[in-house]
Image (cartoon, rainbow over the protein chains, first blue to last red):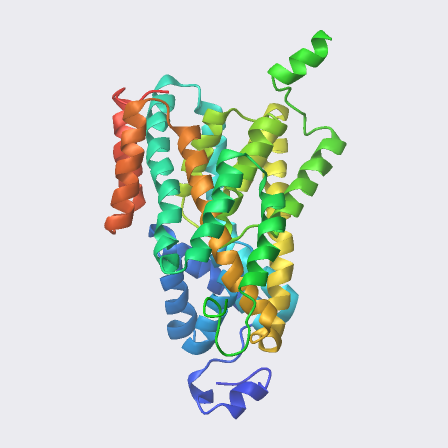
Length: 204
Length: 200
């Protein structure tokens, strides 16, 4: 295989031969489109790992997992952030946009069709009755979001207190998201600011 | 006097054909983008506030419908914003609705995308920074609290009556305890609704 742009990092790495040459914009676009299409039944994260790491060999698993960490840490939908991360790593801002477009094009177009159908037919009695049922299941999914990550904080009373205060501010007093985050965020960051090797929770 | 009263009691839909309004919408979604913690779901109650209470594009029931459709549709989460943008301009016709959908989606994704590009290119420089560690550990519990508040908000938006709440709670428990695809829950609940067992 011919390497279009000699990658210094790839040549220095012992696994250089295992990795494919850095993808160009077109490959980024179609690669992420393949991820989006494969994941139509769900499991986007697993599919993205399979296609990016195993099939196309754009990056090794360690880099992929680092990307996932960054994608989860920063604001924005995780899967979209991951596409942006991959695109940016290889082709900068324009690569990020190519990867993002590839990931969104088909699902977004489909959703637009769904939306057009919804707004056209929502007043039909049968459609309304079906949706009256579907929304209750969707609400159940929404309710499960908090419970899904609750176990991570079970042994940290300060975290639970912060979560409770945030919940009360938004759920009971109906304070808007931005002021809540702007007040609670810095307070929480101050509490969890790393102090030496002891780590948070140990120091008082 | 009566005008003021009307404005308080009923919500007057704002037209997106008005450029000032379109710009306001773009500004609102742009400024929310960087607050989408925990994968974006923390923004759901803000979306409800903007599209139902503040701009009156859609009713609360329609918001629940659109949330369910976005959840059921394949692809990454957060595309709900596209549907809200569509609802915002539906009165002006399908062409405007599509344009508004695309603009809203771009507005909600642009700031977080730009930040993510910076993060991807400079991660090694700040991976061990105390700011990064404090941000990750501190914002986690806050995200947790927000997700509970958002879950409750969606629950109250979607559910009317005892059968609806029962279905939601059962779905919540099954989601936490099993690996059944959420599409099954939506299909079964949709059938229950179709037979008139769940009303709103």
